[in-house]
Length: 91
Image 1 (spheres, helix red, strand yellow):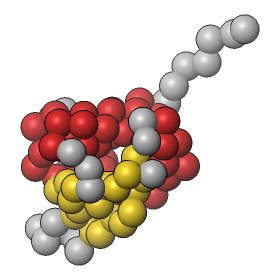
Image 2 (cartoon, one colour; image 1 turned 60 degrees about the vertical axis):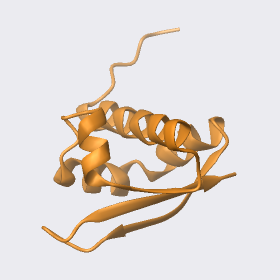
Image 3 (tube, rainbow, N blue to C red; image 1 turned 120 degrees about the horizontal axis):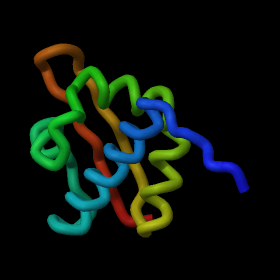
């Protein structure tokens, strides 16, 4: 089987999923996760990157969360400077 190189956005999607899972594991789901905890987990996850990755790779995020028994209930993005939040629950 040939090795497929991941794009930068695919790598960030994996980073975002990993950060969401680690926070949900640590703080127990259901939980609402904002940008700051995600940035503490991985400084490469800027608000712009998070929004773009969410819109482009929603399916892979849902799949990664489902593998660990979580589900993405809601995502809210109120625009620049107003915050964004992920609501994670148990599947």
